[in-house]
Length: 382
Image (cartoon, rainbow, N blue to C red; front, side, top):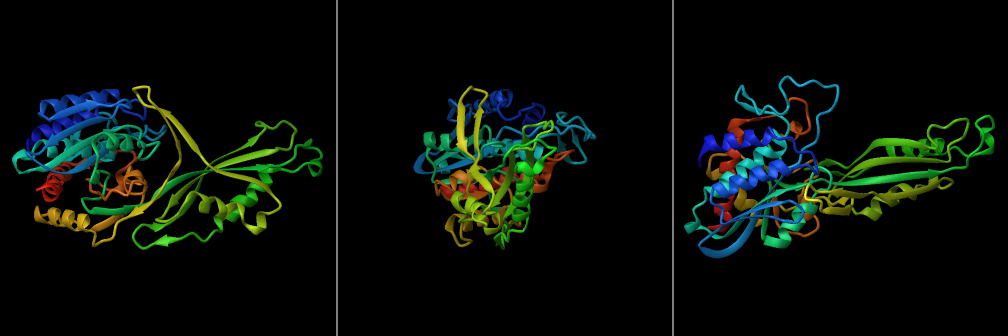
């Protein structure tokens, strides 16, 4: 494996801004690198995912490695020590937006696949450089797997070089209270939807949510609130809408999440509508995804053969990896949570490195991740 070229490639990716729906330059760079490394097949699908394939000399299973190309933006008012798109290497780390989440992992996957000995490989390795993960987890990976198949999936999100065998899911919950308008000089003649929503919020904050020993607690996090009409000029608001980010645990389903709110006895006098949000996003290739924003949690047993083989492979190259679980949502919400494809997560960096000011990734972890991806492929496809 050419470590210098791996680092240079990762730097190039970090230097290219790639918000969700604007990944074209990164996609082109990934496609170019795969071709220069003599992947057996490199293609761009209708959504803009880049799919690179290394094919072994013998038939066998298909393992898909997935890393998304998009990143979150740069939050205003929070200065970075370095230009967030500098790709600077300082103090042994690659600095910039996407270094840890997750352009470093993408670069490591590409170089790991390219370094495999096809003569010793039974099956094929697919590298999925996917779009729009930051807004719709799993929808792009679903399209990739429809084209390539998958017996196993590796998600490259940060695990601190441990092996994730599960992960929280995510739901976007929209709530609306319906009141009755009146002049604000006579509020008793109407019904204030904001005051009703305050009671709903209080009830949600008091909910006893489930907890998992590996993933931690389920979460309801209020992310926005607005009344209607807004601004309200001398009128009692007749509508109030809020959005909650609901972090899910294995087994939770959309109807149960919504019932836990609307069936509260103390809210029975409030006209309350509860729905799961619908996301509509265009990829840089002008492909439109429309998706309900419910992305289920997932969990593999610790004694699952895929988990054990992957752990053994990582231990075999000197990594002290242990079983873990993601506390955020990843593309595995589809591969494991919906499609039930055996899936593990393995990546450089920590979850706490994602979406932060002064994001960075240790070079030694970047290299270790590439070696780990190679070891897992060899273990599963030897």
